[in-house]
Length: 334
Image 1 (cartoon, helix red, strand yellow):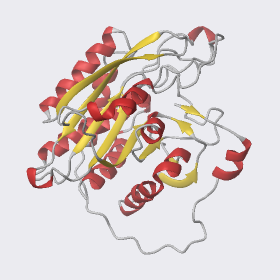
Image 2 (cartoon, rainbow, N blue to C red):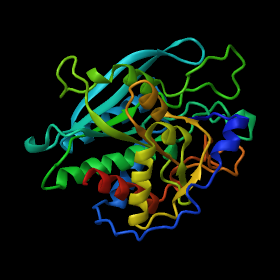
Image 3 (cartoon, rainbow, N blue to C red):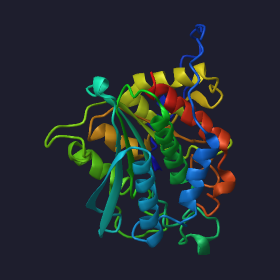
Image 4 (tube, one colour):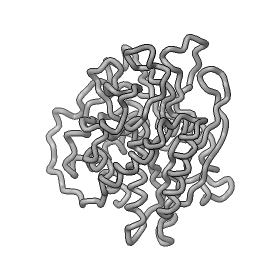
């Protein structure tokens, strides 16, 4: 992911939303089932393969692990492949994992909810202070694996439910973190991040095995989980999410408040962040919200371990995974 900055945006987006509006009494939300230890194990299972850099054995083995696990949990899984132009002008193979969790027949025509994350990890630790370490791949425990781990546990909990009242599509994007490295001095290109999301957004009506030829999947909205495992994670209202999917941001934040997680889902607004959700919104026209750990006081806007070799399991907390997972489960069970 990448932050877009401008003086206009700085003046308009670093605001506290509705600070002066009196708050109404908040009704408690029903408690959703979500096993934090299981989600943590799914995160650790990915990290155990090593850096999931596209084109490596670790990436391929992790793809097989995620896909086979989702199939075992009852999902219809298809791997969407294609080629995209990367930052240096070379063609990059992309493999998105698309999983469909069908609703019961009585509810099959309801609009689906799209749940997304990225499963690749950055090939370069280009935010390391030591320049000699910047070409080494990162572990990607938070930046990639945490969101995938939460969604794998969502699929496991979905399997255990007695009734499925709406279809759920889980799309795990590839090549999110192939964006131009900080040390690159060649020709600068646009749209080098989120290659898997760009591919999927351009062709999403053909990406699921349950869709008839030429018939687009119908989504009410989508949620992207990115870097959702840090013990101190804070999730502000991201700019593009507000622009394209504001009412669903409100819906998610109200759910967080009802569940008692308002301390983590704060009303501060961020700069625009180029993440997978941007292309889901701008190309596929599906309103999609980015739940991303953002630190407005840091130099990069992200956590201290971001795009370094310290993005490991020591910075993943089961309780944070649980809070994010419970919000997702509550929303899909409404």
